[in-house]
Image 1: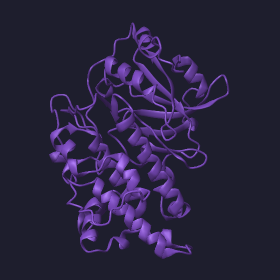
Image 2: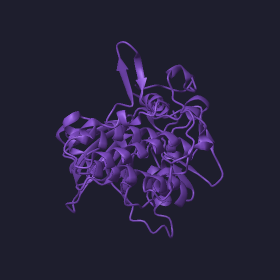
Image 3: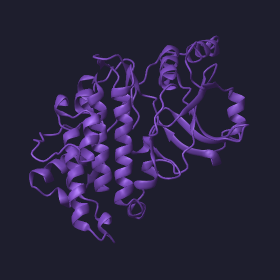
Image 4: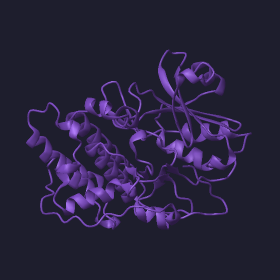
Length: 360
């Protein structure tokens, strides 16, 4: 279920191409960012054929395409509905910043198309689709994700976020870290994608929004309720993703007897009962010759996840510290874990009722 409250500002249709060209091809930019024509991308995707459709989200549809140089790319066609378009200046400024983002665990942005109301983004094509597609499709899918793969995915996502949060200036808050926004290359290496909701911040600043954007279950409570967005909002989402990957359970589950059950709440309860081991995905233990080692490591990871989802944002570790915890450079033994926060009621979400819309 997705909650997003996008800007209703409309794009200008006359000088978009000039504006984008000026911003992303500025002097000294040093980027290999291309401006594609809509026709070029239409041909590449065989007319945006349904057979080439590889994904869909709140901000658009993604197609596989082959460019004239025979390179394979993913083409994201953004929604053209006015209420879901983020405004020309915001679109251009984010494209200008993101085209200079380079990291082995981030999907590379090759270019964009801006023609009239048409907006497209061109990314690397990921052969193994998303983590949600490969991992969350049932027990058989999870069996193929052994402990080594799961660790590799979590460390890759953590490194990508540490880069965005601590190495980029202005730093970038992704705002929608979740399994469907983690793509997998041919070797199942993770690539964080979909910066449609990303926000850029100068050092020492935060952002307060009247339109909360993100996905229920992954939303940090302080952002959902007050609209206050910081890097710790991404840390919270990462913690939820970590618990999801280690447990193999849904972030939000529904039980006829107990109603909606949140994975964060369940993990907290098991931690208090000293029974986190019961949350470890049982398929991980099938055929493993060293169950004790694996269980100990999995429980260690889940404790890191619980530190990331603590209700008080300032208590959550920075992503660089999360990496050290996951790689045992920093111990979590003896570190106090406080109560997590989670959004249990959509009515708590901060909404600009005059301008906002919801999609679930």
